[in-house]
Amino acid sequence: MADDTFSSAGKTYKITVYPAPADGKKYPMILFYHGNFGLGSPFGDQIRDFAKDLAGRGYLTAVPQYYEDDSPHPTDSDPDTHVPTLTDAITMVAGRSDADPDRIGLIGFSLGAATVMTYVCSNPPGLIKVLADFYGFLTPAIRAGVGKFPPTIIFHNKNDQIVPVGNSEELDRLLLSSKVEHQFVDPYDEYWKEVDHAFEPGGHADLDSQAKTTDWFNKHLPPSGR
Image (cartoon, rainbow, N blue to C red; front, side):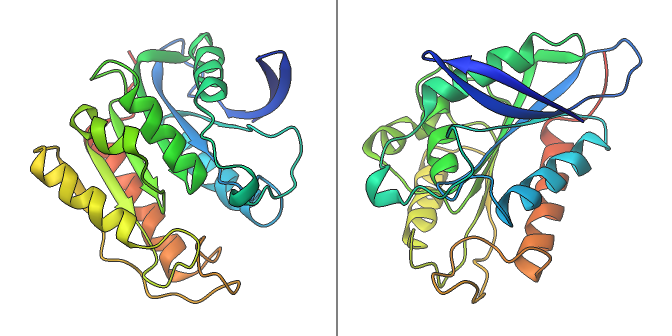
């Protein structure tokens, strides 16, 4: 693990990188993009542990921030996606000697999920090889661009009071009509932290979604060096 920084629009952001096997080969890179609750406890540990686990399976993984602090930033005061910052984080990670920039996967959570989906829609098809959407919300740009999506797995809590599960249900229908390979996991029935949005660390939804994401990425972006 290496704690580092990267620059975007004149600002400096933290990024945690979990390296690929040190054998001189280049490995698929996976970026994890957090939600508007940031990387403070417990969400930061949850996401970083997930990234560390995937790195141990043969990926180069990274967890960049798009806030300059670890404090929550409520959605009503931060409605915008953070595509430029994600773009710069991808560029930074792709410059590593163990990174294969032709094999990129993205995992987004809430606002971070909306951001990675927007990134996919605003870039040429095929740039991103696989995607995981954890309780992200849809925008007109995402709805219009689903035809560019790579193989995508979708997770949500049916009790979510921040991003209604209808967002994922609609995404499922849009991907189906666009004939994009995807899996919409049956929404979980979990109650945690009043708003029932993010998954409880160590709970069924958390562990099951991570296991299914790992299987999905192993299938569509195998962790092989080259």
